[in-house]
Length: 432
Length: 177
Image 1 (spheres, rainbow over the protein chains, first blue to last red):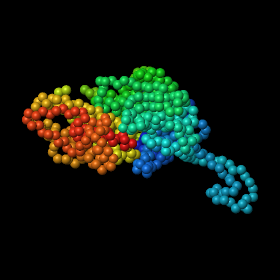
Image 2: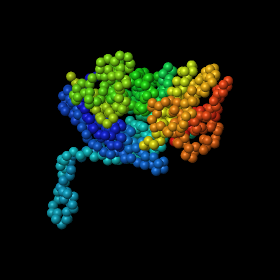
Image 3: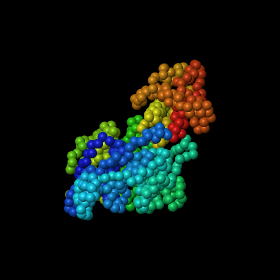
């Protein structure tokens, strides 16, 4: 897949913490460590023509979450946006859910491009007229104005999580959604903020017996009763909400036995799943652990159907990666629109794509220095050991501070959004 | 396992233990509070390192018994001198120095916590190796010529500072939530 680059360097100092396209791909939302949400909108030049080029421009910016202080526990609650999920569009306005560690908010983003003029009782500047001066009546008219995009918080879902929220997922019924923290998953109704149902609780009676935590959760794209959650032990549980109110017993447990030859001090850390995503068709799910991406068939629990090594050359460096904390990095993964390609990030601003059908993979780099706008991205290669070929990069010269944790794929087209530490890159398929 | 290999594994295990403890300590001051997932992973690594440390120590003990040296255990000799100030970075430090440093650090963490007392008094904590917390540098008897060092039984009180650190850290990491 050759890509033409249409870069959008945002240049903010805040670190991007989540990236999400909406259901049509027209809007792209990013959340950052400072609690801000920036939404980009696609401006399409000549979409009717075969070689259209799209640009994403800033559409709306707002402060979603502020830092808070929990007085009971003497803890600061970070304003960092952990996840954003869009609701499918029902009317002219757009809605999204954004969450930090403790509180989920529903935001309405609406456009205003007309304003009323010609009130009977008010002047244009808003002052009230003296009623005695009014001699005639007229109907106010709507006249065009410069587009204004307003974001307003419509719901605040608070105080339901003791631990840190890692996931939110909107149900296919468009009425409910789930939120997951380290030990519990709650089910909410979008209209009701003062209560939620707890559907998974893995907190042990004695916390000393804790052996695993929930790392991600997602609703099935079509089956409103089904959701999955992944754990720090590398397992995925599929639950059916029809089975019981509390879904502590899973319907399916997906787990691959560990390869004993790979055992090390850090085996447990690297098997922890950092992200789980259903395929668009709902037949598969993908998980990301530290070194690999696995595709699971929902009908087969004992092993994944496909495994892709993201950066196997790091396996011998786990001790250093533990020391510099990189081993705790949580990479996300995503599917393309027709589930034929999956993508995930790595270090040195590299990101990887795996073409499932053609059994090909490619490593690309998101950086200003190495490519210019409109230029085709050059595939990169990391030299694991031995003689380094020209254009290859040795493992030791990788920059572990430049990590791509968040990526997103347009739901229909071959447009991807890749977030480096504080820049957002948008790449588009080159059309010949 | 040969004596040399056991020592290397032992040193590696101790280094990882020390790094883990410093991460644990650092995470307490992190913005947003203690992260359960991260603390759990740290405690798992410490547990593995502790187990490996134990088993390599045992094989070390066994092989040093065979040697019947007149001098004391080499690592022990390095632990004796002084109590260096707590380190902030542990990346490239001498493995043998880690323990007294971390012992010092752990000492600072745990001494002024009131809920340390139950741990101290209760010597029957099921599942945790060390019964007696030992903040002081290891004081192991020097071997007299002709003496043998017996392998420590699993529930031995004075199995070493590293072990007690781990026991304490593991005890305290998760219940802190």
